[in-house]
Image (cartoon, rainbow, N blue to C red; front, top):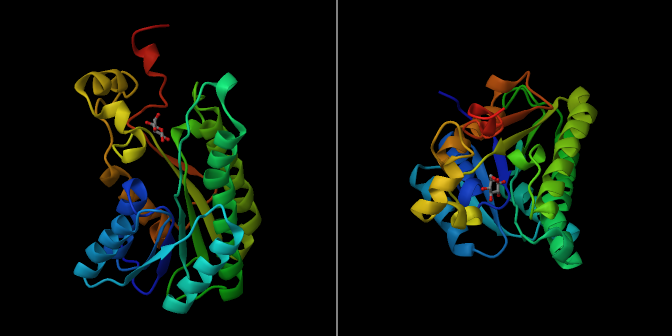
Length: 266
Ligand code: BGC
């Protein structure tokens, strides 16, 4: 049984979907959790209630992760509340899909702003705190843990989603580079790359039986993922059980990355 007792976490984009499930799972594992949301306060409140029901500590905090000043005050607020920070889950992400030749600068910048600049701003703030705090052995073997929620599309090109795929491809080398840079300070940096998980972001891809059938052609394991498939992976990456794991990506995708077309073709 993994315990994150006495540790504090901040999860961005935690008012729905994968972020919501990760926040609740961290709370149930014993961590104090700051639940960030941008627009959906009600969703964030529900995550906090879920954690408090199990006697955990949680509070919700509004911020747009693409905004430097809002990110800075979100981290200050978290430190005021919990006195320390041990875990960042940089999860907030959006899609604004368009054919490449029709993609507006606004769609490009919106997605890069939240998905990649947001990851940079939050990771930088967390890393500053982790370096300042240093190792606190009775909390964790690491001075801090950063977990990026990326996507299979950090590796799989995705027509009609150039902004999204570019943001996740960028996230891959952001993750690896800062893992390399921060390892001597005992800060671990990893990514989770989910495949198709049932959340609001991809509802159209699974909500009708026809859509789900066509989605399943891409998933060798033959089921669409649930947020509960991802949350325990984040808990493990945040825990000392993964203390020797840094700079890596855990794909949680039912085999989406296994070139399913080759099962019958090639
Ligand atoms: C996207 C989803 C998509 C999945 C698999 C995710 O990163 O946000 O919309 O279903 O990748 O393609």
